[in-house]
Image (cartoon, rainbow, N blue to C red; front, top):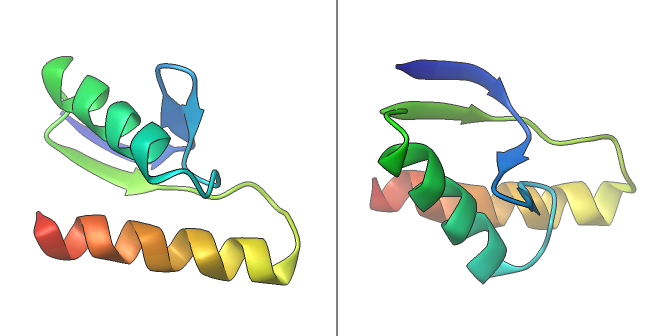
Length: 63
């Protein structure tokens, strides 16, 4: 299953700067059958969105 619009899962939000929370959300989605996630960010200040984008890029590069 490919989720084309996902803000997070299992109590974690992809806009959250916490590496562990984002990893928990990704792991939960994969365990639940999601093979690919297009992470969506909620609107917030510019710096927070850039930080979240950098964090998610690292996860994307890691596969």
